[in-house]
Length: 180
Image 1 (tube, rainbow, N blue to C red):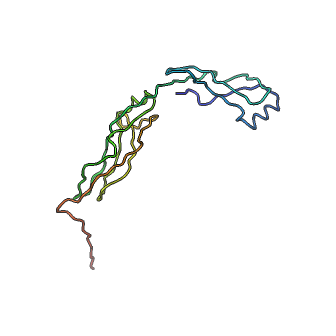
Image 2: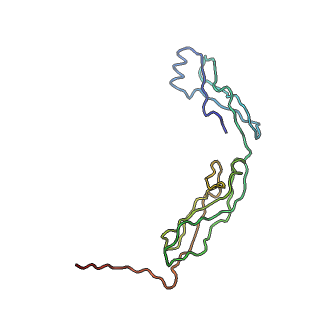
Image 3: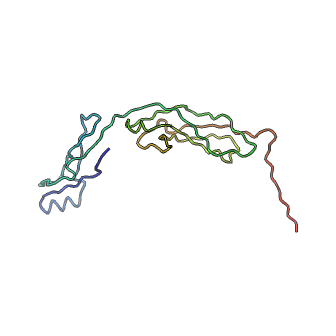
């Protein structure tokens, strides 16, 4: 996590250098060196590089940027299929078949700990034919809210649900004849 998304600098230089800098801001770069750092919280000083001379760096704001580095973790989670909606009267859904029963979730350990379920959702409302489609997998917390900052592999799965019409039911067209 980063506490600052940008760095402001004050530079002392001749007017001609200031004019060149204002026309090509890409000559100024700010970076933070994370080499050799392990998981933890750090206050790091931005390294400023100005591609024009002569210049003197007067001020950097913020002078330090607070970063929290976390261990990347992976875990396997069962996929929970959520079926919303109801089929029309006279239709019945068979057992759903998923192309995978589990998926890998990976990301920062603190975000991974928030994941309670890995869900795939299908809406069966007004469905009268068998279903075969790809569903996106969504990591959610205990309240059912999406957990951001984690990745899922595979990102989606294939789902097949046979839908059949029950014996004793059939679809018919009704023709209405009006008179008068």
